[in-house]
Length: 439
Image 1 (cartoon, rainbow, N blue to C red):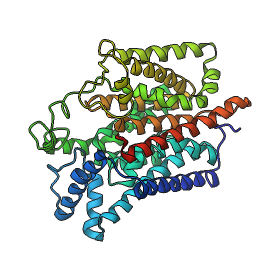
Image 2: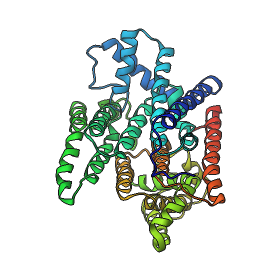
Image 3: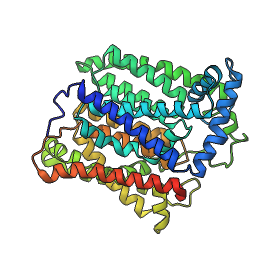
Image 4: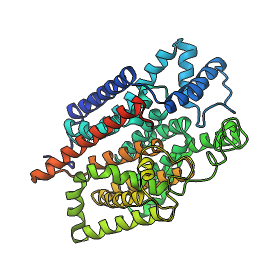
């Protein structure tokens, strides 16, 4: 095996990882589109929200009406598509092709991020669970904006893990601006930029100055979000606010999601066990005798965040994925033992993942996870499609940062079999879902 501290040549290995990741995304998306069928949620979102917004903007260009439209996010993705319709004359098929190109961009960013740190085969192996995730596949095969946002999140996280230079800082600032124009809830990525900038301070006394620089990089995005909030009179367009056309239930877009941290940890537990062998040795080497203490703290943290909020299936708008498992099992005091158990495993995996990193990388990854959870807490709709791509992205990017030197054959085998097994599971879920199995 190799050491991730070694510099992997950015020529053949990285470019191969980018190219093969893009090819995998292309094959997966085309296979899903031509051989499977979208479920009702995908059809509804595409036909009732995204395509109508794109067509309306196309008619209104060059002066689109942005004060109210049938999508609950900022309109960057839809304006790009609308411009393609208006000025390039493309139809629905062309829009699907453009959307697929955007999703290939997500795969390319992931391939670049992983390929910088490891050989091509490991990069592809780790990237496959994300590229076969049902939520990523459907957003690639049908006209949905999620992959555009996840690609930018991946880019910011990847650049943040590099040394902060004027070039990487400018890249993160631009990516953050574009990101919040596509999906405003991802403004949390600004904290990742700030963490990366501060952690590159040469001396403790430089951190304040570096913090000011990091904050300055987030100002364009903050202004953009503020402009839309002022224009809408809220965090979403008026038709999604109380009394608006799309405000179906009082609990749908109002209130908050106290179980966001619990659900995130449960997903980290469910998917993290497949990738745990990538963190095991490095975390034990860094922690020494304190390894099991770190695991214990993670277990306790997972228990606390999952036992405090109500986690029963009965709360409105809890559906899909792990919520189905929760539905099958009894609850105790409106708390789900299934979710609590998964969250405790997730806490242990998260602790081990962070313990395996260098100090700078640990701070950046922890900031990303905490701020993502904080942003999701503002949304009462704890749907797996809002969480799973981020949890998978966080885990595979974290794995790529870790020293992978080992001579233990069993451990090497488990590092391979985990992602392979997880990919097989993801493929099965995707096929089941797109053959009428629900969300």
